[in-house]
Image (tube, rainbow, N blue to C red; front, side):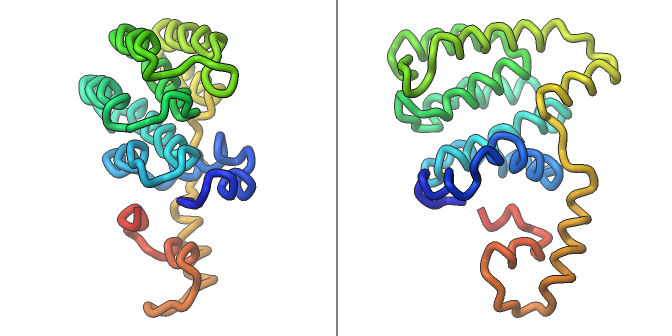
Length: 200
């Protein structure tokens, strides 16, 4: 997943927006810190970083990252992430802020745009994306957080991990690969590793 962006895009297609984050959500319990470290890692492609940022946002929604800590981390993202002004990953940052309802970060967003650190153009962030950001932020802060309403909101926003995928993946890995000294490709070896996040 750390290959050239075009290669990653051709391999993953649209799955990076939904499927891969949902897989990560299923396996990343108690791994919020590692997800964040990959999201801000400059050595990874933006597609990979966005998938892990979305997973981190899900973990924050589920209470694995405190609201105070999430605010602090997202506030520092423009500096820590080292993004080009026209990076598509800015959209992931905006989405995380909006879906977590962190309206106190609106001045940071506006400053990032005003200073040109986040560039508004037809190839990256559009004015319509900013409109979506404000609408999503308002919705996140107004949604009724009863268990039923919160579940419906998460489903619509695709914060829905694959059910019981963690055990399914390990059963599949044991079936396909056996033995400690596996000669399988690295991607398959990762599936049999209970500390899979350590490889990132």
